[in-house]
Image (cartoon, rainbow, N blue to C red; front, side):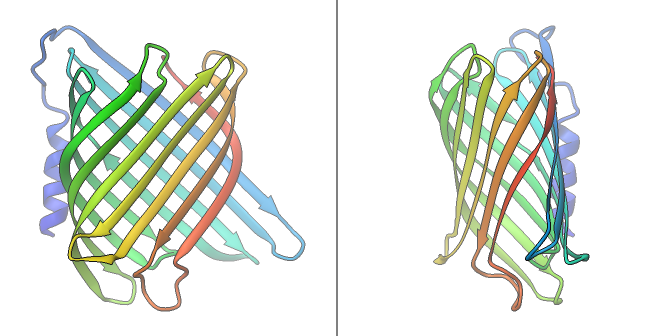
Length: 241
């Protein structure tokens, strides 16, 4: 309950007015994606995934992205995947320097997670960025994480969360990639790796066809649950400028 209360306070605080050098400069950007997969033969599988992102840019130095995703999948007509993920990462930037806060919530039927809460903060650095949205950036946050599993067990750990973000565009093609490495600070053999990359072929300024690859590995989960999961999906995306 303590973690859920802190998370709600963090997300609620993002709705309050934020002081900036130019209070009248506010930009809101939205992007959404629908994708899916169907296979039959050796294994009958259906998968549906949707993700959404809203970013508030205020003044010259403040940003507040909120991202959410939902995944639903069946194998041989049995539910295997039902995952919710919500992250809020408000940040302050000046030049190439970033300072992030994070509040996160997760559910995962595949990995046996009833509820997971995350809170943290830390610095980041953009090695490259330009006006076209191309970027190479690294950040490292210290996070406190509480996980409640479907088998009734729970664990609370402190982690280091290192993120590599790459975004590149060329004409009608856009590539985006995000990789997280999150070891337990008290036991580095306990770690989690997540990766998501997307290649978009834009056929209008706002609509695109996308191919998305996601991978998750977590080495400490309830017995009988798979440690890793890989998905490749094709779908459509919409975004505002």
